Image (tube, rainbow, N blue to C red; front, side, top):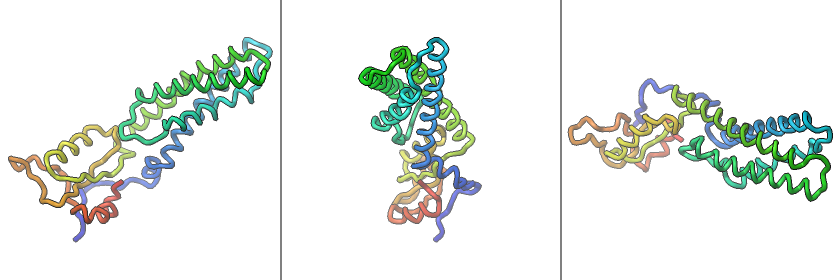
Length: 222
């Protein structure tokens, strides 16, 4: 039998599907960090040039960008999480910016780079510490706005059809920032109607765990 699907549910575009999944989702996040780190580096170079004639070679300062991105990757900051909040990202980003700045200063000191190395690295640190969280904040605001409209939502199957499943469905619908859009239930038993018959989840029963692959194919659940 054909699996019932909720009516009036618009399928997501291919671009929306790709951009919320890896690797494109992670690529977008890395691109934002590279852009903000590059702008911070350029701003620091300009800042130093306005106050000193003998500045540190720009190619040496440019090492900050791959260094901070590599450290963020090593700390697994780019791993996808269910509930990624902006406040949770500030700490790892600021700590990584500080470590990358100290690493850059160490390299400059050991290689005897001419110029005002301490002041240059300090200004790179300040600019990156402000601009990199700002880039993440803009990304989080745009993503939250798109999900509330709703866009960038991942079709989601709920395993179970009892009281807990009902609570999960209600929670996901009230928190679109999680990016999960419940589309149906999977359970081996008959749908639960609640003590008064009116508290059942407002989602179709799409079969049993044995037919979950068919439900995934027909609903596009992720």
